[in-house]
Image (tube, rainbow, N blue to C red):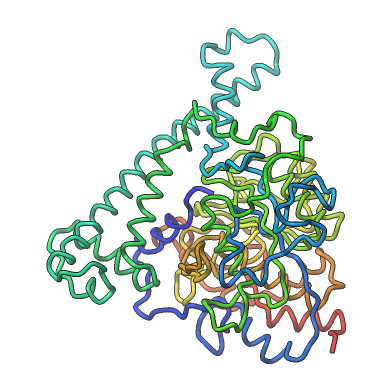
Length: 532
């Protein structure tokens, strides 16, 4: 997770995609035919297909940055470990994790200290190789293995140098945007004598300089999506701080906080019970999309109506580590989760096998994994985005789905401009732009990213599993893909990562489809008789 929320959102605004018509806060739950938005038809499904039907409570594991389990819209849907007594310092259920009431935190230590920021996996891989080869030339090497690794080092070094250059340019770009918006805000506050700048204030402001005009345009685009300008400035500052921090620092050592032996990939019992941790915005937002309490007249409604959220904290601001992800999968599966949402990813995976083994373990236990495709506007058939469904042996996990991000209004930019894609790798698209959901301390916010599209898909999968508990992960995946709505399959859309290059929507994923709960339920009804 690399501060993708604000960056993806700004990409959307900066590309001048923001709509004049304000989208409904719950657009991802709405129906295309009834509401003219690319939603997944949750509301229609409950009204027309599921009314009066019985369902089974299921557990969804949110493997992420942490979840605010006390949030007003989440506290009633959090998983509570039935075998554990809160706060007694004893491993009552003898699962190896003390006081794991709502989940576990693999990026903290037994004394309660937590990692919030970590570096990129690229940085870690480069550091290890650079320490070994920085003073060597190919002529100094003897064995074929050394020469092969040295050539790999050259590739990684080039990638690291490129990342440093791009990161510097990106930081400068976002500093420019922040300063432009700040100028507009300061001028409005001074002219109008107000403490808070509204959307109406932005509309009325007459920007004169080009920089001001750009700042106004971006701030106004975000305001129309529901983000207040002061919150936007805060997020920009956080993003700049993150990008300027430990991400590319070769001397950074955040891992020592945990106190584990990171080299030991078999080690499982480390961390602490603080499954909220610090920096829980991302995970809390994801959890709300899946299962925020429905019809309680508070905040927003999640997709699923009979779900318990298990929070497994394993993703920092930076790149997650393979060992933590593998252990998070094992923990969630062993404690009853049947669907896992994994809204994270990275370019390198030096210990891919331990993650592959964990995915296979989940597969053997009947657990479906929903994974965000990533926010680089890249073809992940060509540029691998880890973790991935393809194993080291070349086979694909049958319980693993990659989800692309969809815009809310049916126009040329149907696929979000930041979304990764891949006709062989991405299974379906789901709503991922301007998604309104929960954030810590009882608040709500609009975020964009495939990180938001994945939990929409996970929510749909959770509803299916809840009402049709007999469905296996393989069957769930088949239904979600085959029932996806093919409205735009042959339509020319703007290719993600480009300004105006057109491509047929069906070339962006395996199905050319948009996940849809209504159609998925109808297909499931044809396979398994629904309870009445």
